[in-house]
Length: 436
Image 1: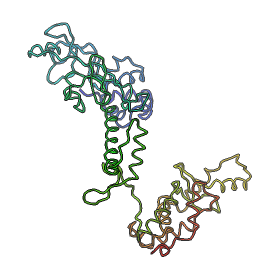
Image 2: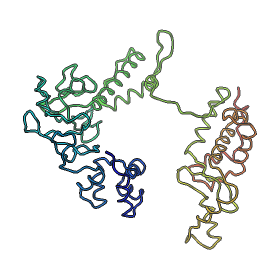
Image 3: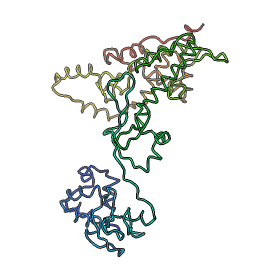
Image 4: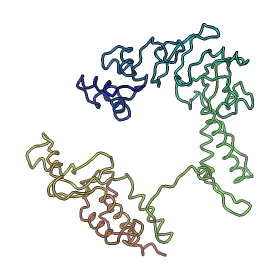
């Protein structure tokens, strides 16, 4: 049965409340919850106590208003059961409790209304089919993991590091390593479950140990192939493993086909992804130098915020952070001194209002033009930049000219961005200098 459209809406309108205010007070989504309730949807049981307190109603009365059901009423199907508060947070109906026809001692709680209700409790149902009832779940606590050299155990699983396992679930326990080997004791590495002591090692903690042993095996195998005459170092802790891996990165060997093999486990597994950057064209010597200059240029990532709003400036506003910036601080302080404010009043609102008038500056286009200018200063031509960006060559020329006309001085930008701005003022790097 669906609730009347006016039930929730009448209570809300009688209290002179809006949908947004109720959503904020109950900390629930506006569209997915409150608007649906306002159209006649049933609130779930988890929200019912909060709704009763909010509208200052009794819980049983709130159930009658929002679900159109009354506690202790007889079930409609004629089973003889009576309705009661549910014990399931997602319920949208009252549960029905009725005594078991087999033992008469236990109460059955059910929510199904279309196919009738169960007449036997769990144990009586299994006994009627000639089966033994399953044993209840038992609590277990994770014993953590401890790498070699660690004095304190660590956890990879979230707190409280406890769970409950049903005996029937042990056959299909995640990882399926426990029952395959019948492991009930702790060997310090693998997963196990000990029901008597209430301990187990989860797959996350066991995975850390497996990863450590896999890294150790990979490094030792590479060392034995790169230095067959030397003994493989002993690994007693995580620090020694890191040192061995660092040394393996400096080694290489030739396989049977004559190919030089280097130690790079990340690329072998495909875990490292290359970052997308603008293409570096030209000969290998040119690409190497441009990449070196680009890294020097990059330093702290600069974000173009727009053009300075102070009258008479109009230069680029650069900042390494995500906070909106409208002016240079040096220009802003001088502008305040000229007006005789001396920092007592912050008239940024008047500047932002003035920004809304006339032609608007698009920060996205300025960032695009700024990126084109960096590539042009590092030696790329207008044609290469236009081809890589998919625009006309004339647009690249105009964008670079706009940035060069509005490039700021060093004293107007933060000190971390001085290397980038100094390269804006330096002459363009000619390609012919690095050709061989």
